[in-house]
Length: 248
Image 1 (cartoon, rainbow, N blue to C red):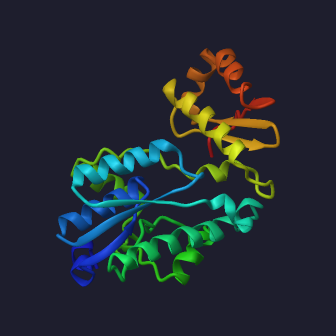
Image 2: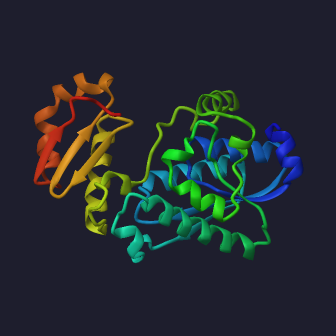
């Protein structure tokens, strides 16, 4: 099955929309196939503002209706205690909220941007998608991440080369409680680094220690401004270390 055939079978659907590469292309494909869709973006403490900004921009460029659902994920004890399978509880809560909102709008089918490259064995959140009967058209059609980027570039989507971005909760070491305060500090630190031109980065936190991870091709730029960067990050964290192994 290709995406044109998929949307002939499912011509009306709600799309869980993050503003990332995969869900952006899925939204484009649905629009191109003349499917009737609405994009649903869940805004929680785990999503930085730029993700919402990108989602709004793309939905406007594609002229696809988009709804923003506010969700307090920090009200869920199973989430904030941050177990190994935290992603399962988080995805369950997020997609339940989307399904409920979509049902009120008359949608029975819910789609997400999981692609064929995503390893189910390493993603506990996929269990939640199965339980909630979420369909993943990119995966169903055998499109991997490189396919999605290539097709997005051909379609002229600004997201085609957007770095993968896991939610802010992934920065906190598993087993350590997640608080609104630490999420704010992480977002501020990462926003500062991106303002300097760094990309595809992570500021990982354990207690008061922050570990900065950058792609190796950005090491030289970091070393040129190391003192300035470390001084700024120490405004948010007690200790700052640089991961010389690079971004995994």
